[in-house]
Amino acid sequence: SAALSSHTGVSLTARPLLCPGVRGFASPSEEPKKEPSRWEKIKATFREHGPVFVGFYAVTWLGGFGVCWTGVTIAGVDGVALLQYLGADNVFDTSALSPTLVNALIAAEINELGEFVRLPLVIATTPALSRRLKALRR
Image (cartoon, rainbow, N blue to C red; front, side, top):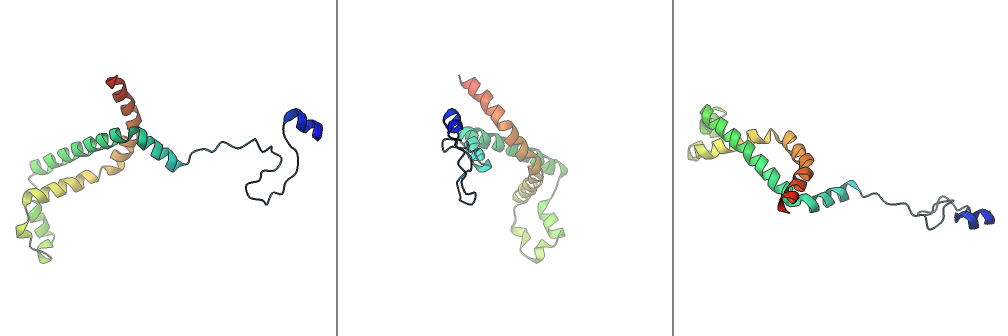
């Protein structure tokens, strides 16, 4: 055992397995390399690509909102009449609402239906976009 220990640098001394933090049959110099947690990876990615992510997400959200707003406008949706049809006038005074504001809220809600596709797409493509933007700045 002593000859093997001096030759390889690995100690074969048995240690109790119930002691926390003690690894049996390993030399003290062999510390496992700790893999960063998922949360640490997310924070590092956001530190590196944060401004690009925020800008890219804002552009995709506003683009989707513009498409939805255009669709609601072209379709001639009357949001106030829709609220009255649904019985909202029994709860609050719908005559004081701005039709433009109600239609904008309808467009925003329609836009949010695409969030389950938009957010993963933005997260997946942000690093590539960030690298391309860095190359353009040089």
